[in-house]
Length: 421
Image 1 (cartoon, rainbow, N blue to C red):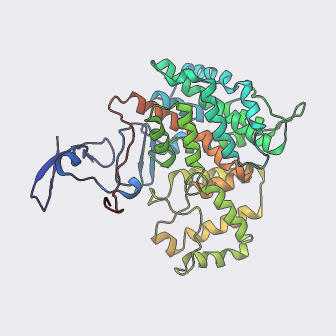
Image 2: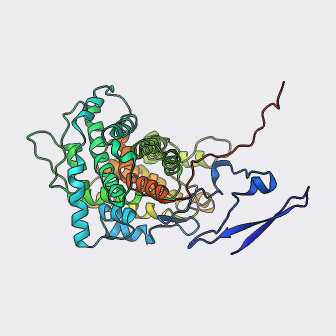
Image 3: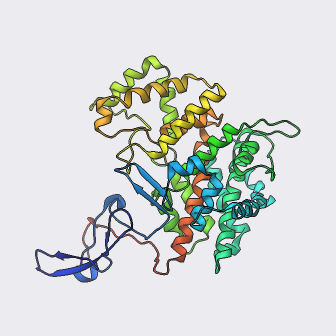
Protein backbone atom coordinates (compact mmCIF):
# COMPACT_ATOMS: atom_id res chain seq x y z
CA UNK A 1 0.00 0.00 0.00
CA UNK A 2 1.25 3.47 -0.86
CA UNK A 3 1.84 5.95 1.92
CA UNK A 4 2.60 9.66 2.11
CA UNK A 5 4.68 11.23 4.85
CA UNK A 6 3.69 14.49 6.51
CA UNK A 7 6.24 16.44 8.52
CA UNK A 8 5.47 18.99 11.22
CA UNK A 9 8.09 21.70 10.61
CA UNK A 10 7.92 22.82 14.23
CA UNK A 11 8.26 19.47 16.00
CA UNK A 12 9.96 17.63 13.08
CA UNK A 13 7.55 14.77 13.74
CA UNK A 14 6.94 12.60 10.69
CA UNK A 15 3.84 10.44 10.23
CA UNK A 16 2.94 8.08 7.37
CA UNK A 17 -0.62 8.08 6.08
CA UNK A 18 -2.11 5.38 3.86
CA UNK A 19 -3.11 6.15 0.27
CA UNK A 20 -6.12 4.22 -1.05
CA UNK A 21 -6.41 3.61 -4.79
CA UNK A 22 -9.50 4.50 -6.81
CA UNK A 23 -10.57 2.68 -9.99
CA UNK A 24 -10.98 6.07 -11.70
CA UNK A 25 -9.93 9.55 -10.67
CA UNK A 26 -7.72 10.62 -7.81
CA UNK A 27 -6.45 8.28 -5.12
CA UNK A 28 -7.18 9.42 -1.56
CA UNK A 29 -5.10 9.95 1.56
CA UNK A 30 -6.58 8.48 4.75
CA UNK A 31 -6.18 11.32 7.26
CA UNK A 32 -8.53 9.86 9.88
CA UNK A 33 -5.66 9.73 12.41
CA UNK A 34 -4.25 13.18 11.61
CA UNK A 35 -5.58 14.82 14.76
CA UNK A 36 -4.46 11.96 16.98
CA UNK A 37 -0.97 11.84 15.52
CA UNK A 38 -0.26 15.53 14.87
CA UNK A 39 -2.96 17.51 16.67
CA UNK A 40 -4.22 18.99 13.39
CA UNK A 41 -7.37 19.08 11.28
CA UNK A 42 -7.48 19.78 7.56
CA UNK A 43 -9.15 22.98 6.35
CA UNK A 44 -11.21 22.49 3.18
CA UNK A 45 -13.72 25.26 2.58
CA UNK A 46 -16.69 23.74 0.73
CA UNK A 47 -15.20 20.23 1.04
CA UNK A 48 -14.03 20.44 -2.57
CA UNK A 49 -10.92 18.38 -1.82
CA UNK A 50 -12.37 15.99 0.74
CA UNK A 51 -13.74 12.50 0.05
CA UNK A 52 -16.31 11.82 2.76
CA UNK A 53 -17.37 8.41 1.50
CA UNK A 54 -16.46 5.48 -0.73
CA UNK A 55 -18.88 4.93 -3.63
CA UNK A 56 -19.23 2.80 -6.75
CA UNK A 57 -22.32 4.51 -8.18
CA UNK A 58 -21.30 7.57 -10.19
CA UNK A 59 -18.03 8.98 -11.50
CA UNK A 60 -17.32 12.44 -12.93
CA UNK A 61 -14.22 13.57 -14.81
CA UNK A 62 -14.66 17.30 -15.02
CA UNK A 63 -11.62 17.89 -17.23
CA UNK A 64 -12.84 15.41 -19.85
CA UNK A 65 -16.50 16.29 -19.49
CA UNK A 66 -17.36 12.70 -18.59
CA UNK A 67 -20.19 11.34 -16.42
CA UNK A 68 -20.59 7.60 -15.76
CA UNK A 69 -23.39 5.72 -13.99
CA UNK A 70 -22.00 2.35 -12.85
CA UNK A 71 -19.43 2.66 -15.65
CA UNK A 72 -21.87 3.59 -18.43
CA UNK A 73 -21.45 7.00 -20.15
CA UNK A 74 -24.44 9.26 -19.63
CA UNK A 75 -24.76 9.90 -23.37
CA UNK A 76 -25.18 6.18 -24.02
CA UNK A 77 -27.78 5.70 -21.28
CA UNK A 78 -29.87 8.76 -22.22
CA UNK A 79 -29.95 7.71 -25.88
CA UNK A 80 -30.43 3.95 -25.53
CA UNK A 81 -32.20 3.18 -22.26
CA UNK A 82 -35.31 4.37 -20.46
CA UNK A 83 -35.21 6.18 -17.16
CA UNK A 84 -36.58 3.14 -15.32
CA UNK A 85 -33.83 0.98 -16.81
CA UNK A 86 -31.37 3.52 -15.43
CA UNK A 87 -33.14 3.33 -12.05
CA UNK A 88 -32.59 -0.43 -12.07
CA UNK A 89 -28.93 0.14 -12.94
CA UNK A 90 -28.38 2.58 -10.06
CA UNK A 91 -30.23 0.45 -7.52
CA UNK A 92 -29.15 -3.04 -8.60
CA UNK A 93 -25.78 -2.34 -10.23
CA UNK A 94 -26.71 -3.68 -13.67
CA UNK A 95 -29.04 -2.83 -16.53
CA UNK A 96 -32.05 -5.16 -16.48
CA UNK A 97 -32.84 -7.88 -19.00
CA UNK A 98 -36.37 -7.96 -20.42
CA UNK A 99 -37.79 -10.13 -17.62
CA UNK A 100 -36.14 -8.08 -14.88
CA UNK A 101 -37.36 -4.86 -16.48
CA UNK A 102 -40.94 -6.10 -16.74
CA UNK A 103 -40.91 -7.10 -13.07
CA UNK A 104 -39.26 -3.82 -12.03
CA UNK A 105 -42.00 -1.81 -13.75
CA UNK A 106 -44.72 -4.04 -12.29
CA UNK A 107 -43.34 -3.63 -8.77
CA UNK A 108 -43.39 0.16 -9.09
CA UNK A 109 -46.75 0.77 -10.75
CA UNK A 110 -49.01 0.09 -7.77
CA UNK A 111 -46.63 2.08 -5.54
CA UNK A 112 -47.51 5.26 -7.44
CA UNK A 113 -50.54 5.76 -5.16
CA UNK A 114 -49.78 7.57 -1.89
CA UNK A 115 -51.99 7.04 1.14
CA UNK A 116 -55.18 9.08 0.78
CA UNK A 117 -54.32 10.89 4.00
CA UNK A 118 -51.45 12.65 2.19
CA UNK A 119 -53.97 14.64 0.13
CA UNK A 120 -55.15 16.45 3.25
CA UNK A 121 -51.69 18.02 3.63
CA UNK A 122 -52.10 19.94 0.38
CA UNK A 123 -55.12 21.77 1.75
CA UNK A 124 -52.91 23.36 4.42
CA UNK A 125 -50.81 25.18 1.81
CA UNK A 126 -51.79 28.41 0.05
CA UNK A 127 -52.09 28.27 -3.74
CA UNK A 128 -49.03 30.50 -4.15
CA UNK A 129 -46.70 28.25 -2.12
CA UNK A 130 -43.56 27.28 -4.03
CA UNK A 131 -43.87 23.65 -5.23
CA UNK A 132 -40.58 22.72 -3.58
CA UNK A 133 -41.91 23.72 -0.16
CA UNK A 134 -44.98 21.55 -0.66
CA UNK A 135 -43.07 18.65 -2.18
CA UNK A 136 -40.45 18.47 0.58
CA UNK A 137 -43.22 18.53 3.19
CA UNK A 138 -45.27 15.76 1.61
CA UNK A 139 -42.20 13.57 1.05
CA UNK A 140 -41.27 14.02 4.70
CA UNK A 141 -44.84 13.08 5.63
CA UNK A 142 -44.43 9.75 3.80
CA UNK A 143 -42.18 8.66 6.67
CA UNK A 144 -45.24 8.72 8.92
CA UNK A 145 -47.13 6.40 6.60
CA UNK A 146 -44.20 4.05 5.99
CA UNK A 147 -42.42 3.99 9.35
CA UNK A 148 -41.43 0.36 8.70
CA UNK A 149 -38.62 1.66 6.50
CA UNK A 150 -36.84 3.07 9.55
CA UNK A 151 -35.42 -0.38 10.33
CA UNK A 152 -34.36 -2.25 7.20
CA UNK A 153 -32.69 -5.62 7.55
CA UNK A 154 -32.75 -7.23 4.11
CA UNK A 155 -32.01 -6.47 0.47
CA UNK A 156 -35.68 -6.99 -0.40
CA UNK A 157 -36.66 -4.31 2.12
CA UNK A 158 -34.10 -1.87 0.67
CA UNK A 159 -35.49 -2.36 -2.83
CA UNK A 160 -39.12 -2.14 -1.71
CA UNK A 161 -38.42 1.12 0.09
CA UNK A 162 -36.52 2.54 -2.90
CA UNK A 163 -39.21 1.63 -5.43
CA UNK A 164 -41.89 3.16 -3.22
CA UNK A 165 -40.26 6.59 -2.99
CA UNK A 166 -39.27 6.66 -6.68
CA UNK A 167 -42.84 5.77 -7.68
CA UNK A 168 -44.57 8.21 -5.33
CA UNK A 169 -42.52 11.38 -5.89
CA UNK A 170 -43.97 12.03 -9.40
CA UNK A 171 -47.49 11.65 -7.99
CA UNK A 172 -46.75 14.11 -5.19
CA UNK A 173 -45.14 16.52 -7.67
CA UNK A 174 -48.18 16.37 -9.96
CA UNK A 175 -50.53 16.85 -6.98
CA UNK A 176 -48.44 19.84 -5.92
CA UNK A 177 -48.80 21.48 -9.34
CA UNK A 178 -52.53 20.85 -9.59
CA UNK A 179 -53.17 22.15 -6.07
CA UNK A 180 -51.35 25.38 -6.97
CA UNK A 181 -53.73 25.79 -9.91
CA UNK A 182 -56.87 24.80 -8.05
CA UNK A 183 -57.31 21.85 -10.41
CA UNK A 184 -58.76 18.48 -9.32
CA UNK A 185 -56.10 15.92 -8.44
CA UNK A 186 -55.64 13.16 -11.01
CA UNK A 187 -54.86 9.64 -9.86
CA UNK A 188 -52.00 7.75 -11.52
CA UNK A 189 -52.81 5.69 -14.60
CA UNK A 190 -51.26 2.26 -14.07
CA UNK A 191 -51.39 1.46 -17.79
CA UNK A 192 -49.03 4.30 -18.66
CA UNK A 193 -45.24 4.26 -18.52
CA UNK A 194 -43.61 6.16 -15.62
CA UNK A 195 -42.88 9.39 -17.52
CA UNK A 196 -46.02 9.39 -19.64
CA UNK A 197 -48.05 8.91 -16.46
CA UNK A 198 -46.46 11.99 -14.89
CA UNK A 199 -47.34 14.15 -17.90
CA UNK A 200 -50.85 12.68 -17.80
CA UNK A 201 -51.31 13.59 -14.12
CA UNK A 202 -50.09 17.12 -14.88
CA UNK A 203 -52.37 17.70 -17.88
CA UNK A 204 -55.50 15.56 -17.60
CA UNK A 205 -58.99 16.56 -16.57
CA UNK A 206 -61.85 14.26 -15.62
CA UNK A 207 -63.70 12.93 -18.69
CA UNK A 208 -61.29 14.79 -20.97
CA UNK A 209 -58.93 13.45 -23.61
CA UNK A 210 -55.23 13.96 -22.93
CA UNK A 211 -52.82 14.03 -25.87
CA UNK A 212 -49.21 13.17 -25.04
CA UNK A 213 -46.75 12.66 -27.89
CA UNK A 214 -43.95 10.10 -27.76
CA UNK A 215 -41.32 12.76 -28.41
CA UNK A 216 -42.48 14.59 -25.27
CA UNK A 217 -42.25 11.39 -23.22
CA UNK A 218 -38.81 10.60 -24.63
CA UNK A 219 -37.51 14.12 -23.96
CA UNK A 220 -38.70 14.22 -20.34
CA UNK A 221 -37.52 10.64 -19.77
CA UNK A 222 -34.05 11.69 -20.90
CA UNK A 223 -34.17 14.70 -18.57
CA UNK A 224 -34.91 12.34 -15.67
CA UNK A 225 -31.98 10.13 -16.70
CA UNK A 226 -29.58 13.07 -16.99
CA UNK A 227 -30.51 14.21 -13.48
CA UNK A 228 -30.56 10.75 -11.87
CA UNK A 229 -27.26 11.09 -9.99
CA UNK A 230 -24.24 13.37 -9.94
CA UNK A 231 -21.74 12.10 -7.41
CA UNK A 232 -21.43 13.92 -4.04
CA UNK A 233 -23.18 17.21 -4.86
CA UNK A 234 -24.79 19.43 -2.21
CA UNK A 235 -28.18 17.70 -2.10
CA UNK A 236 -26.73 14.17 -2.23
CA UNK A 237 -24.29 15.04 0.53
CA UNK A 238 -27.26 16.39 2.50
CA UNK A 239 -29.12 13.09 2.08
CA UNK A 240 -26.03 11.22 3.28
CA UNK A 241 -25.52 13.61 6.19
CA UNK A 242 -29.12 13.25 7.41
CA UNK A 243 -29.03 9.52 6.72
CA UNK A 244 -25.91 9.16 8.85
CA UNK A 245 -27.96 10.14 11.91
CA UNK A 246 -30.27 7.16 11.50
CA UNK A 247 -33.20 9.30 10.36
CA UNK A 248 -35.96 7.81 8.22
CA UNK A 249 -34.84 7.52 4.57
CA UNK A 250 -37.75 9.64 3.38
CA UNK A 251 -36.78 12.34 5.88
CA UNK A 252 -33.30 12.28 4.35
CA UNK A 253 -34.83 12.60 0.86
CA UNK A 254 -36.93 15.54 2.07
CA UNK A 255 -33.74 17.23 3.30
CA UNK A 256 -32.18 16.62 -0.11
CA UNK A 257 -35.17 18.30 -1.76
CA UNK A 258 -34.67 21.39 0.39
CA UNK A 259 -30.97 21.49 -0.47
CA UNK A 260 -31.76 21.12 -4.18
CA UNK A 261 -34.17 24.06 -3.97
CA UNK A 262 -31.31 26.55 -3.75
CA UNK A 263 -30.63 28.65 -6.84
CA UNK A 264 -26.96 27.72 -6.73
CA UNK A 265 -28.04 24.09 -7.14
CA UNK A 266 -31.28 22.70 -8.60
CA UNK A 267 -33.02 26.03 -8.82
CA UNK A 268 -30.49 27.33 -11.34
CA UNK A 269 -32.63 26.48 -14.39
CA UNK A 270 -35.35 28.78 -13.06
CA UNK A 271 -32.74 31.54 -12.92
CA UNK A 272 -31.79 30.84 -16.55
CA UNK A 273 -35.37 31.40 -17.69
CA UNK A 274 -35.65 34.52 -15.52
CA UNK A 275 -32.58 35.92 -17.23
CA UNK A 276 -33.72 35.03 -20.75
CA UNK A 277 -36.97 36.84 -19.97
CA UNK A 278 -34.96 39.80 -18.70
CA UNK A 279 -32.99 39.92 -21.98
CA UNK A 280 -36.34 39.81 -23.71
CA UNK A 281 -35.34 40.00 -27.35
CA UNK A 282 -32.54 38.85 -29.67
CA UNK A 283 -31.64 42.50 -30.28
CA UNK A 284 -30.67 42.84 -26.59
CA UNK A 285 -28.33 39.85 -26.42
CA UNK A 286 -25.14 41.71 -27.35
CA UNK A 287 -25.75 44.27 -24.61
CA UNK A 288 -26.10 41.58 -21.93
CA UNK A 289 -23.08 39.65 -23.24
CA UNK A 290 -21.07 42.86 -22.85
CA UNK A 291 -22.36 43.24 -19.29
CA UNK A 292 -21.27 39.67 -18.48
CA UNK A 293 -17.75 40.43 -19.77
CA UNK A 294 -17.44 43.75 -17.93
CA UNK A 295 -15.33 43.20 -14.77
CA UNK A 296 -16.99 46.21 -13.16
CA UNK A 297 -20.51 44.84 -13.69
CA UNK A 298 -22.04 42.33 -11.24
CA UNK A 299 -24.16 40.75 -13.99
CA UNK A 300 -23.46 37.03 -14.54
CA UNK A 301 -24.66 34.96 -17.45
CA UNK A 302 -26.75 32.16 -15.94
CA UNK A 303 -26.43 28.59 -17.22
CA UNK A 304 -22.76 28.81 -18.20
CA UNK A 305 -19.83 27.15 -16.48
CA UNK A 306 -19.85 24.46 -13.82
CA UNK A 307 -17.95 23.89 -10.59
CA UNK A 308 -16.95 20.37 -11.66
CA UNK A 309 -16.95 20.38 -15.47
CA UNK A 310 -14.10 22.31 -17.07
CA UNK A 311 -15.20 21.07 -20.46
CA UNK A 312 -18.65 20.83 -22.05
CA UNK A 313 -21.16 19.33 -19.59
CA UNK A 314 -21.97 15.93 -21.21
CA UNK A 315 -25.57 16.21 -20.04
CA UNK A 316 -25.90 19.56 -21.79
CA UNK A 317 -24.90 18.02 -25.13
CA UNK A 318 -27.72 15.49 -24.86
CA UNK A 319 -30.27 18.14 -23.86
CA UNK A 320 -29.29 20.47 -26.70
CA UNK A 321 -29.93 17.68 -29.20
CA UNK A 322 -33.26 16.85 -27.54
CA UNK A 323 -34.36 20.47 -27.46
CA UNK A 324 -33.59 20.94 -31.15
CA UNK A 325 -35.42 17.69 -31.97
CA UNK A 326 -38.43 18.76 -29.94
CA UNK A 327 -38.53 22.13 -31.70
CA UNK A 328 -38.33 20.52 -35.15
CA UNK A 329 -40.88 17.74 -34.58
CA UNK A 330 -43.45 19.82 -32.70
CA UNK A 331 -42.84 23.03 -34.59
CA UNK A 332 -42.24 24.95 -31.38
CA UNK A 333 -41.05 28.52 -31.79
CA UNK A 334 -40.85 31.22 -29.14
CA UNK A 335 -39.00 34.43 -28.45
CA UNK A 336 -37.49 32.81 -25.35
CA UNK A 337 -35.89 30.01 -27.38
CA UNK A 338 -34.70 32.50 -30.00
CA UNK A 339 -32.95 34.50 -27.29
CA UNK A 340 -31.45 31.32 -25.81
CA UNK A 341 -30.13 30.24 -29.21
CA UNK A 342 -28.49 33.63 -29.78
CA UNK A 343 -26.87 33.65 -26.32
CA UNK A 344 -25.58 30.13 -26.93
CA UNK A 345 -24.24 31.00 -30.38
CA UNK A 346 -22.21 33.93 -29.08
CA UNK A 347 -20.95 32.23 -25.91
CA UNK A 348 -19.68 29.16 -27.79
CA UNK A 349 -17.52 31.28 -30.10
CA UNK A 350 -16.55 34.27 -27.96
CA UNK A 351 -12.97 34.04 -26.70
CA UNK A 352 -13.97 35.42 -23.30
CA UNK A 353 -16.24 32.44 -22.56
CA UNK A 354 -14.19 29.79 -24.39
CA UNK A 355 -10.93 30.70 -22.62
CA UNK A 356 -12.66 30.49 -19.25
CA UNK A 357 -14.39 27.16 -20.01
CA UNK A 358 -17.78 28.83 -19.63
CA UNK A 359 -19.69 26.32 -21.70
CA UNK A 360 -23.48 25.98 -21.50
CA UNK A 361 -24.38 23.62 -18.66
CA UNK A 362 -27.40 21.38 -18.07
CA UNK A 363 -29.39 24.22 -16.48
CA UNK A 364 -29.15 26.35 -19.63
CA UNK A 365 -30.75 23.69 -21.80
CA UNK A 366 -33.11 22.07 -19.29
CA UNK A 367 -34.95 25.33 -18.66
CA UNK A 368 -35.68 25.97 -22.34
CA UNK A 369 -36.49 22.29 -22.96
CA UNK A 370 -38.96 22.16 -20.08
CA UNK A 371 -40.50 25.38 -21.36
CA UNK A 372 -40.89 23.74 -24.77
CA UNK A 373 -42.67 20.85 -23.03
CA UNK A 374 -45.18 23.28 -21.59
CA UNK A 375 -43.98 22.82 -18.00
CA UNK A 376 -44.26 25.97 -15.95
CA UNK A 377 -41.18 27.49 -14.37
CA UNK A 378 -42.01 26.79 -10.67
CA UNK A 379 -42.13 23.08 -11.57
CA UNK A 380 -38.61 22.98 -13.02
CA UNK A 381 -36.94 22.01 -9.75
CA UNK A 382 -39.59 19.41 -8.84
CA UNK A 383 -38.81 17.81 -12.22
CA UNK A 384 -35.18 17.68 -11.06
CA UNK A 385 -36.38 16.03 -7.83
CA UNK A 386 -38.21 13.29 -9.73
CA UNK A 387 -35.08 12.41 -11.68
CA UNK A 388 -32.67 12.69 -8.74
CA UNK A 389 -34.71 10.65 -6.24
CA UNK A 390 -33.22 7.36 -7.46
CA UNK A 391 -29.69 8.72 -7.03
CA UNK A 392 -30.41 9.96 -3.54
CA UNK A 393 -31.91 6.67 -2.41
CA UNK A 394 -29.15 4.63 -4.07
CA UNK A 395 -26.58 6.74 -2.20
CA UNK A 396 -28.54 6.32 1.05
CA UNK A 397 -28.60 2.54 0.61
CA UNK A 398 -24.89 2.46 -0.16
CA UNK A 399 -24.18 4.43 3.00
CA UNK A 400 -26.32 2.11 5.13
CA UNK A 401 -24.57 -0.96 3.73
CA UNK A 402 -21.15 0.51 4.57
CA UNK A 403 -20.30 -0.91 7.99
CA UNK A 404 -17.57 1.70 8.46
CA UNK A 405 -20.02 4.58 7.97
CA UNK A 406 -20.22 7.10 10.81
CA UNK A 407 -22.43 10.04 11.68
CA UNK A 408 -21.21 13.00 9.63
CA UNK A 409 -19.56 15.52 11.92
CA UNK A 410 -17.23 18.05 10.20
CA UNK A 411 -14.73 20.00 12.28
CA UNK A 412 -14.03 23.73 12.21
CA UNK A 413 -11.31 26.32 12.43
CA UNK A 414 -12.23 28.44 15.44
CA UNK A 415 -11.26 32.15 15.36
CA UNK A 416 -13.52 33.48 18.14
CA UNK A 417 -12.51 34.77 21.58
CA UNK A 418 -10.37 32.61 23.81
CA UNK A 419 -11.72 31.63 27.24
CA UNK A 420 -12.57 34.81 29.13
CA UNK A 421 -12.98 33.62 32.73
